[in-house]
Structure formats: structure tokens, C-alpha cells
Image (cartoon, rainbow, N blue to C red):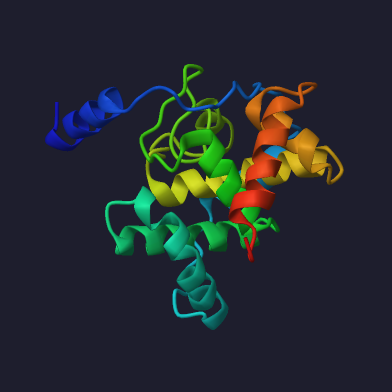
Length: 194
């Protein structure tokens, strides 16, 4: 086993499996939805870390997330990427911070009992459905891109209803606990001015 693969396996096995992810349901997507999501996942856009709005936002938010990361540079990289992927998908980055907090507690190598992976607890079937076989869901940028793309899909499917989109994301449609938890974290912990 190559050294990198062995290290990744050791990290996965060492990570507590207490992530709050449910089990997103595998669903048959129409060809057009699948193609659109796949295009979004596989694009290679560049992030401008010197964008003034992004820099100002990161400066404020890094104080809130710093303790969740190894160092400040890692926290900044995470925030820059999360903001970029959130905005690219037309989502509120503060809502996505709340989702990451509830799903994985900001643990990059979190694995749920249902098999969801990474910061945004993405189910591996999505890689086969809209990604490429080489995609590693523990890679920060890919995990955030998948998570934001999938949440956008659910938000569109639910006609903008955030609670229902959150429930779909978690695989708990029809149950209010998870959406309530994320929305509470969004409003009380991650919104600007809190």
C-alpha cells in the first residue's frame, strides 16, 4: 500500500465516527440535472484569495473557526474555499458554515455511520453519479464543492424551502430535528453580527 494511502486510511480509522450525517438517498437524476451537476463539480475555476470582500469576510470569520483547524492558514484556506463554493452555488456561506458545523464539527476526515465523508458529509455514491472516480471526498476543495452543489440541487428541488432542502441533504425528509438544528446554528452561531 502506498504511503499516502496508508496515512489516509489511518486517519480515517482514527477519526471518530460520530458525525451527524444521515443517509442522503440515492436518487435517479434526469440526464440534464446530472449533466449540469457534473459540469459544476468538474469545472476548474480559480479562486481569487485577494478579492477584497472575501478578505474582509475571512478576517471576521477566521476568529470563529480558528480553534477547529491546525493553524490559521488552514482556517483561512477553508473559509476562502467555502465562501467561494457557497457563492458559486448561490448559497449563503453562513448557512454552509452551520451545515459543516452540524454535520462534521469541521472534521476533515469525519465518517458517519451511514458512510458520509468529510466536512460536508457527502455520500460516496455522488462521486459515481456526478463526479470522476479519482475524486477524493476527503480533499477539502472537492468536499466543499460537492456539498454546495448537492445542497443547491436539493434547494432547487424544494423550491427554495431551506428546511426541506436541509432534510433532504441529511436524508431525514419529514423530520424537523436536523433542519432545526442547522438553522439554529446558522442564526445563533454563524450569522454575521452574532
